[in-house]
Length: 484
Image (cartoon, rainbow, N blue to C red; front, side, top):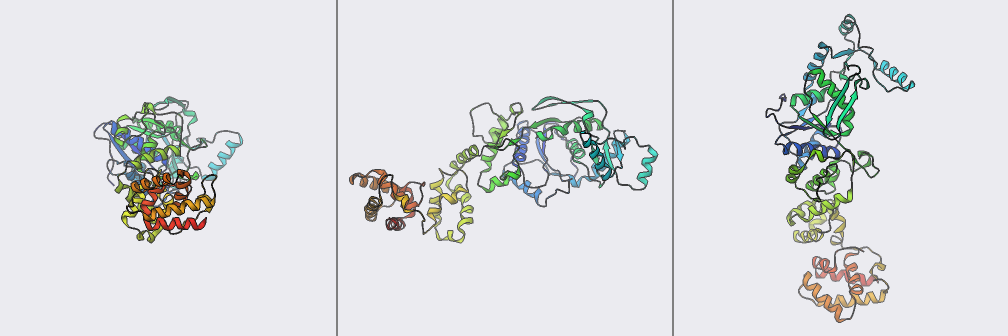
């Protein structure tokens, strides 16, 4: 793999660094978005890095799925993605350099020793922390253990009682005492780096200038600052983003379902709508504008307007925004987007209907769709020969079966005599017919709509009849009369 080096342009450089441990979380997509927006606004670069050094959690295929979802969302990265598992020699080079400079040390403690240590600390109600027992091993003893090839790790030698401070782009000035920071492992016994070593080395080598990441990484930042100082490198500017919260006001979790970006894609949320919505989860543009194109987001995004508190994921608001984007789709686009959902439900039976018929059904529902997958439930009445509903549904308010049967019968006769069969003419002729017969719209159109749709809520009877055609409409009305 080609080694990634500093940003040659000398400008802003951000990165997204997901771990291939599963599907891309919606919070991860937002992190990628914010990094992308900030970099592009500053005329900089947005890079991608796969952090796969934790092999115990590695999920085959996850990397490819992450790439696919970022592309689907329209977040194009610069250059070739860096992959940590292909950079082991680099980390293995840097860790010993810290030993030579006295900034790190070999630790030979076994897992049993570490477990016993944690147990004793917990018994004393102390925070679990490595006690530094290998920190002052004599040089001769270290050489002896290394010569025997005893398993070991490399730990950072955290300075004592030192103030670690940094200016966070969201939370402002933050201070930690180094006594609260563990002598973290940098290089594990299997030769793989820990997250902390790899992220610092990679960000430095890639020339990353700004790190926008989730607030859960805030406690790790002093560890990273100390590592930068140990290497003598300039740390990037950190911006820790507020979590996305569920309805229970806890961090949105995959365990709650529908928390991955792919879940939303599969349910029929358009990428532009999802990006638009999650951009507003933690960022306030300061205006009443709700719909943003990617170009507008790049232009208006401002780190200074990021919230400190978590944002609750409001599915109703996402549905509203997605619905607005769906209504902007051209008819051909909408049909192409909806067809896979219809095919999944109706399979080969969908071939019994002409393209024109399917197009007219999909177009009719465009104004009502909140997400593309809704097309299957809302259009079921158009792809069945047998409507199943209770005859009581045909009865308008305080009317009765006899009246509804009589009304449907005379309307059926009127429709049978009609020639031109389209929505405008159907509406004109039937409304005039209702007026002539001194009926109310409710006692005539309610049973007609239910007869045609079999549903309590559906499009209007004229739209339905126009699509179904004369023969099918008359058949359904007769079936309704028979029910009554």
